[in-house]
Length: 380
Ligand code: UD1
Image 1 (cartoon, rainbow, N blue to C red):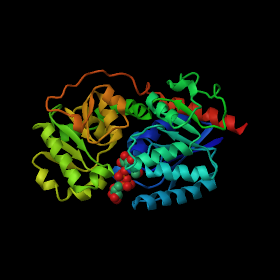
Image 2 (cartoon, protein in one colour):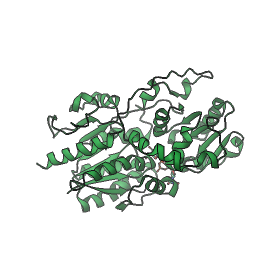
Image 3 (cartoon, rainbow, N blue to C red):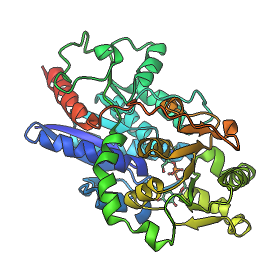
Image 4 (cartoon, protein in one colour):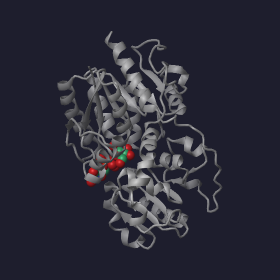
């Protein structure tokens, strides 16, 4: 059996790996997944709840890295991952998204000459002040198989010199997601497989409707409240910026109560602001995936700096105001129901132009196929 290591560590990665682990399981007898949790996120509500809700098995290795500075956290992830990779000797290493766990894991694997497979490759904000942008760019350039969620992500990689583009960057057909058409396996390969977060949402949204009681237990009325989340370092760590965004959201919500599930990073700075904004904002603990999906689905509007939430709002048909200067998920803006906060107007015109930019909900199936084909061909 071919061992594939999956490296995860932060909340969105637990969600992304769930459909992939299910698809890999279908290749039982061919692919064996080994799950490594770096411990970047560790509270029950930031980690374990997602494993329980999505039926993900407990990690095979838990590295217990925890919080520290950017450099120290990335370094520890690299050091501890290297030890595990030396022991298990996987045929390839899957890393997800843009966190310190992504980069630390990719560095450890690449230096051991284990092929790195990047899920959610090619995204760019073109803002190097964001730690996530540094993580994405470097991870892409360490990877041998770059699995993009959109055509735009493929185009971003072409601009950076990647030229082994499978199927010319169009969504791979499910039947032909093998690597037969590839040219030179010694070069990094780029493919558009669709977005695994969409797979995750299709799997979970029905369950969320049934299992989550968030609306009733919070005494909310459907479409008569808005959701707010802020956790990016550039927003959460700067007290002035954080307050500016709270003021903006309260004003733009125009009387709708705001529900704000607070990320631990933001909690520290919010301490001094909570009572001032309690008249308009309900601050809560972080929510599990089911509660969050249901909360967003029934809301009137979402304010967020999270990448995942921008897309979830888009897929659930809920309007979103993104609390950032730019977004990697430009399709949600083109699609008409996402707008950057500086472009938001009081009587905002929301064109509706929902197109299937993010694949067909079968990204995980494609990834399992392409990974199986890739590792087999490399072995030859
Ligand atoms: C990380 C990712 C970001 C992703 C986000 C998802 C990086 C650079 N950023 O940001 O891309 O969108 O996760 O949530 O990797 N903390 C706790 N308990 C926890 C987790 C974190 O208290 O379970 C605290 C830590 O003490 C730390 C802060 O939250 O002070 C930030 O955590 P960190 O691991 O640096 O990353 P995130 O900000 O969550």
